Image (cartoon, rainbow, N blue to C red):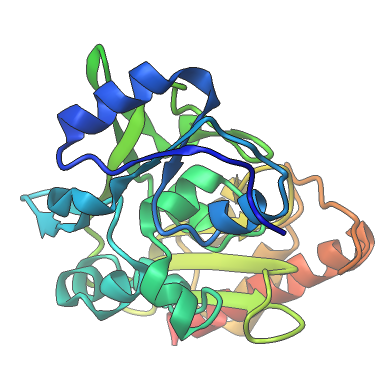
Length: 283
């Protein structure tokens, strides 16, 4: 199907992008990698008056760091993230989860910021951002503001980004030396997750001293598995501990039922995959 007619704008700077968004109003759409937006346009599930393409702003693709954070521009592609040495060293869980996104073609076009702003609960990166306490930098007419991951995901396909704001960067605290794993269950290699578990562990002498766990597709938003984290801290990284911690995986969840899986099947998967992810992360 052919998309409905719209105006196309490709700003060369963030200032121009914010101005274009303000001028276009609430019917505008931001184009990042286009892997979510373009299919929606072709199906005419959205008919924006203006599409604002961020691909002409080089600074949005930068990856860097300061003393505390790895800072990834919203237009950095999944391919950029997976191959970046800094990300692999300091935010290994993000690199591992991103490597499971769709297929190589999508990873070369899709962007970190676009995926997170789209906020599909079956998307792989929201659980990672939540588990690792990422921070989202957004820019609007009133300036820049910072949104914690715990406040960013609000509902199904809904985030805290304002209608007149643009996501410019995602900041991840450094987790150098942590062990991690992303355990994903899907029908085919390119499919969305039925359920997935993001785990990052700090292990000292065989004892788990800190744990971060996020759940994918177990509710309308990514979910932080605090009960699992608490059950792991101070324990040995072994099979019995992993199984016991996995019993807490359903706390605070509301698994959906759809064509891929019923809610009770997802609940079963969440427990099994949590145990696997913990053991894999611990090595």
